[in-house]
Image (cartoon, rainbow, N blue to C red; front, side):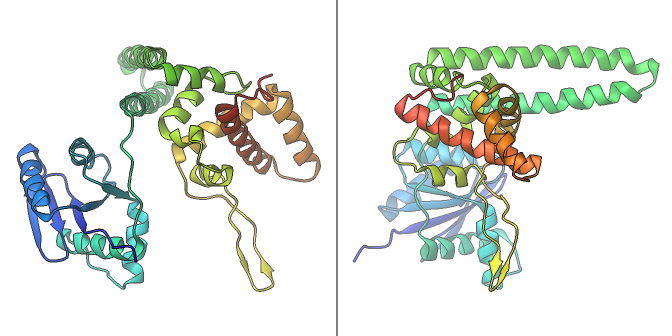
Amino acid sequence: MQHQPYYVAIDIAKDSLQVQTQHAAWSVPHSAAGHRQLLERLAALGAVQVVCEASGGYERPLLAMLYQHQIPVSLLNPARVRAFARSEGQQAKTDPLDAALLLRFAQEKHPPLTTAPAPAQEALAAWLDRRAHLSEQLAREKNRLQKSPILVQHAIRAMITFVEDQLADVDHQLRCLIQTEPTLRAQAQILQSVTGIGAVTTWTLLAYLSEIAAPDWQRNQLVALAGLAPWNRDSGQWHGRRSISGGRAKVRRCLYMAAQSAAQHNPVIRDYVQRLIARGKPYKCAIVAAMRKLLIHLQSLLKHHHYELAS
């Protein structure tokens, strides 16, 4: 019989880490000094598997430290953990309670290990996150310009120019990063050979959906990971409408725009969408189906270097 790992649950806050094991609980600062204290305690425990939740970015220094010291770690989806808490009837929420809940979740669900991202992929994701921030800021400033008094419009235009310059610099950084990494450069060339897939979609797939090039990922798994799997909603003789949910929203949003472009300019996708609409499917349903088809074909291109859609 396979032995269960010795789990160490860590609830991450901005300034502290609440640690829970099967036999003890303690807290350390969320700082370099606190990380050293944590390492000493973990070393005394022997072989462990750390479990923690994604915490809006506060988890990154901790994960970097664990990866650096080759300590196995599982990064959990907070929504799954809260659903588990509700199933346990737990309503209260404090750091010690959350750490204990994480430990129970790990002991019952046995979460898989989280693989450390490649440095190039991590940098790509960081620049893309910054690009999203700037794009949102640019849209806000352009909206303000439309209804602001003339007195302040020059200041808004100056901010728009500044943000546009920042966006251009980020795009330059992204292109340089792709060009300096042979693997990313080859994958980007394959992806952009497909009509409808532009630079931003390519960067997004490589940064947030690295599994697209993994040989052991099946297409249905990849579609579900991107949030494009139509889930059944049936009960007895009642059959509800299938719908997509979950998955990686950043990838899904970008693929939606790519599918709309491909539905106009890629003959394979255009014919596919038109056939679905002719059968009575709503336009958005046809586009979601085109997103799935695009994603599956992109995976095939990266795995086997076929170019059926590269037209």
